Image (cartoon, rainbow, N blue to C red; front, side):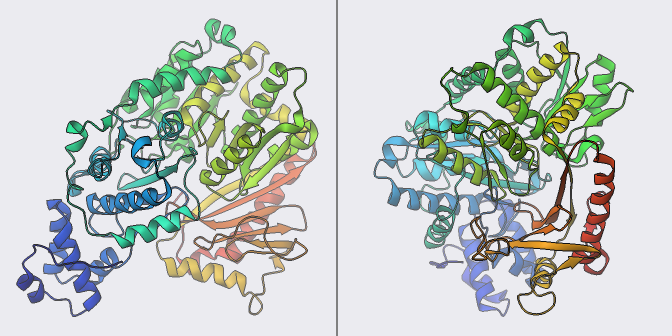
Length: 620
């Protein structure tokens, strides 16, 4: 937890009288009550102390937040492992210290701060307030801060970092997580989320300066400091202008009779998606009135994640039927991800998976590049990327069309950094994705972006309508050309870290120490890759080509029948996820789906053992 520092202004007699009998916990309680100026979170710790709830105090105060696949993310509330005023101040102080060491021009170039619309009354905690405290820490140290005057989509922060030449930026968001959560997403000067070693070094710096500095609590500095600028208009205008670089059929868009419904899932997306459609020449999409405006309670959905499919898209689909709209686009609460549904000829709705949408986007971005590239353009200079747990459909397209395909570890932070590296080396990157409905069309933003993806899918649907095709029909055409890629992805909830560790350690020591399973039920395993330990049986030196990622669990099995299946822990939620995909030539689809279904059942039953381990399946 770092150095405690002085006890501060809390009545020490009261604390001694309420001692927990645990020196480490007493010290942590003392720190919290000394430093926290948010009366509601302070009262939460005082109440736990009064009630003698030492175990919960230990859980809240004796561990720290750590960087996952999307920055720091946790529930809002009191404690050093929660998102709250104090932990955001501490995190920003650590970032200040790290950036000051790394950039001699930090105080000339400045820092970007954005936020979504989350909030929790019981902790007096909101994204805007946390963003103001983030800015306050930096402004008090004479760092110029580009602080957005209102909520923005997450992609605006990495975009602004690059456009304004800032050294870094933070977005306060928990994206599509449950309403109780919030988060702190950090972007480096290259416009990509931070990766190792920056994340580990920042954590060290946070632990070196956990006591709030004078000035760190002054959230009014964003209203009074001459060092604060509002980048909203400049960034929004510039973003919309850059968006037109990936608009290829404006004349069709202007004339289109196709109607679209958009839901922003009670988040930030409405205004920005409207502007994006306008930039492409479209009529504005029809908004879902009940979900158009920000609502931190996400009151019309069971969970604010459009990836959950038809069950959470109910209001959108009913409105689309009423309005005669054939396509629904849904941005998640911070508008960095996109779900798409299309009405089929029989009146039912097809909600596309992330992998299916990637097949469409990959085909589209490459087709548009081919039609518009200069005569001397070299297809071997073109790249597309995906995370390793995503469909290999882009690899199939790349092999046939002659461009390059690369995969990264899960998390867009890895994609963003690799794309920047490719661009710096003169390569052209058209598209990148992760299967959890995260898409990057073009390279104006080096992160997933639901706003640009929404308008690109609208243009694609409009173009296909002119060819008398639907999105679903085109998807089948892509599979006919490049091979069927059938995938199954889902997850189990598990709130006990010890259980998760036991499940994965069992797989690593199946028939003895460091001995992985050779089969799963009746299915023989050809190769095993474990990026948690760096092992890969398919490599001559048995070392994983992908970087080792010890902070999360991830094991991939390649089966004799060609299926590739991965088990991994989520970097943002208490989930064990599974991903499985099989590829086949056209004509074998039905057999393939049955085989994949049986293999997934065997994977779950033999490797995850949900009943024995108390796992809750996604749909339960």
